[in-house]
Amino acid sequence: METKKILAKLSNRTPTLLGKEQFTKFAVLLPLIEKDNEIHVLFEVRAFHLRRQPGEICFPGGRIDACDQNEQEAAIRETSEELGIETSKITNIFPLDYIISPFGTIIYPFVAIIAQCTMKPNKEEVAEIFTVPLSFFKQTTPEVYHVHFKAQPEADFPLDKIPNGKNYNWRLREMDEYFYYYKDKVIWGLTARILYHFIEIINQD
Image (cartoon, rainbow, N blue to C red; front, side, top):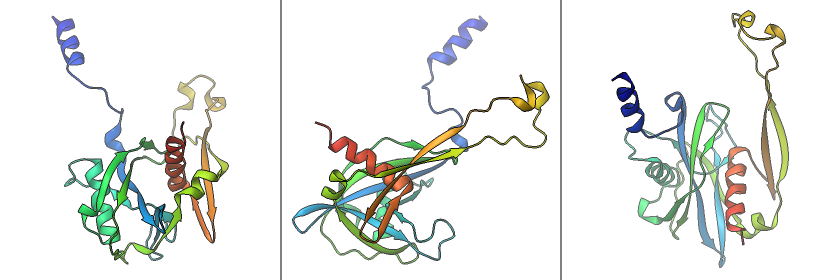
């Protein structure tokens, strides 16, 4: 009888990410616009008074709120709020691969077309916006650097309970950081990583 109960519970569930409730979830949008008869990628520069990552280049986006029906809705809402445009101007929305960062966040990126319109960036969040021709990224190989993360157990960690104790061979975590340089702009971090992923997709034969 107990076996049947266990099997019933296992058969009626859909696997998901273990511990996902402990992650902070964000949605971002990689916006494509038509400019000078070609496709450009639009970027934001984060306002310099922000506590988190001031002055850094990013895509529109932010935390997924309880009011958002799903990740895509969050990306559209954030883009609309930050660029000061109607949501109807954001079309042809497609998901890219989501990212689980080593900093306890899950990022859900989307790519979309933004129709020609007047943008009024929210100065509380956005210092400026700028665009880069998509052709630049298709033809440019980013510089790649590596960041290493080392495990650091807390002082009361029970090292005496695990094999090799203080000499336990902790695995190091390595993360690639991509850098694109366009004029005076440095595009790096998760923004560059999402962009590189997108370019890989559209450059496929």
